[in-house]
Amino acid sequence: MKRIFILFILFQTLWNFNSNAQSTPKTVIAVSGDGIHKILIKNGFDPIKYYNEFIRLNKKNIGKRNGLYIGKKYTLPAKKESDTETAAKNPKSLVNPLFGKKYENVPIEGSQLKGAIYYLISGHGGPDPGAVAKKNGNTLAEDEYAYDVTLRLARGLMAQGAEVYLIIKDENDGIRDQSILKVDYDEVNYPNQKIPRSQKLRLRQRTASVNKLFKQKGKAYQRLIVTHVDSRGQKENVDVFFYHHKSSKNGKKLADQLQTTFKKKYEQYQPNRKYTGTVSNRSNLYVIRNTLPPMVYIELGNLKNTSDQRRILNSGNRQALADWITEGLLADYKSSK
Ligand SMILES: [Zn+2]
Image (cartoon, protein in one colour):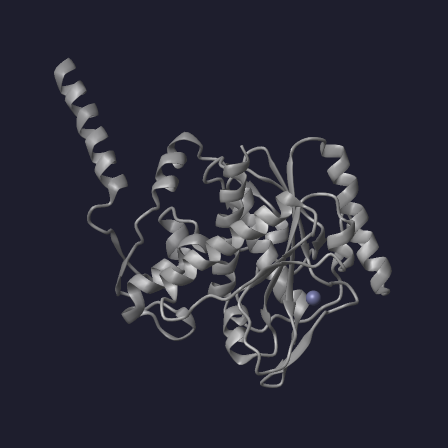
């Protein structure tokens, strides 16, 4: 009896080991009501993280608006190693309603950013939409796109155990997968302040919020990430680029690290296109000059340029931007310890 029991445990262990390694990809049959998100959640995947990979694996069987066909077989992604390892140790997740219904559940994937504190400012907001462009009769507003990337970034950082403060937030937007993000004016400033109309007061307000928190947190590793989507001439195609404060060594290091990560990602995903995003100091901008934590100011692209619009309007690309920024921030934190 005893021997059978031991054998059973051994067998089960081996089986678990194999299923984690996923040497043969698992497949599932789509049933009525299944979508990519639903099928990923049902099978224990973080839908936001594995969405693109699912599409890549099943390209042939994905319909209009990324719909699935009932009765068709779909391949599930292989879980990233970090997920399977930490899932066993730490199955916890947290909930943040700011991410919206679909994404409010944040599975904790690891603890690589434990101890790190991030302040995230998405550009403009409240009465100020920032840069504005037109696309097929729709209005594109900078603040909505910067905010969506910022939310995705916040989610990625929290999934690695970071403490994250969204300095600009909108209670009812959440992470949005549409390509046209509706323009609204109800963003507020942390913790819950109305954003003033005057640019000077607006920038002063967000700067004060960050600085107050920064002083409370003392000596912890603290970083500020500011996200904008520029507007330039329609023909000008710009890669993601970075500003830092002239005399901040840690700010420059952060910006350099992000640039390195983006360069690597471009080599991997767009090998025929050379990445030309720059790092420079721009201390004449109010937020750069007056905030206390080491910071990086990220320009995601030119809202008016058709090819930059692909980077910003596609939700999968917005997620990729957030993931790459997360990866760069991870590397910076690691190298600071
Ligand atoms: Zn801006």
